[in-house]
Image 1 (cartoon, rainbow, N blue to C red):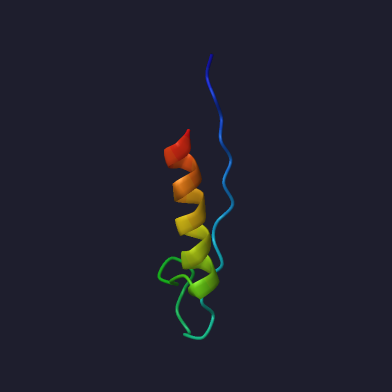
Image 2: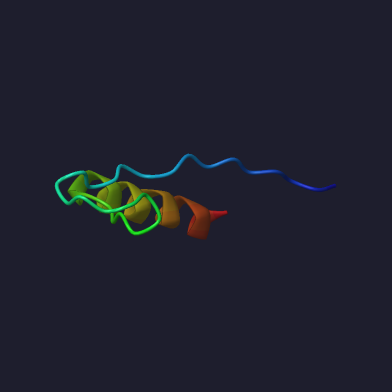
Length: 43
């Protein structure tokens, strides 16, 4: 059976004026990525 996992993007950094494709993550975004990656490793 196939499994579909939907993930919402992490919080981005709006302190710099760039287009959305070049916009990086803020501290909360990096922390969220770390947490979700650990959860995926458990699977």
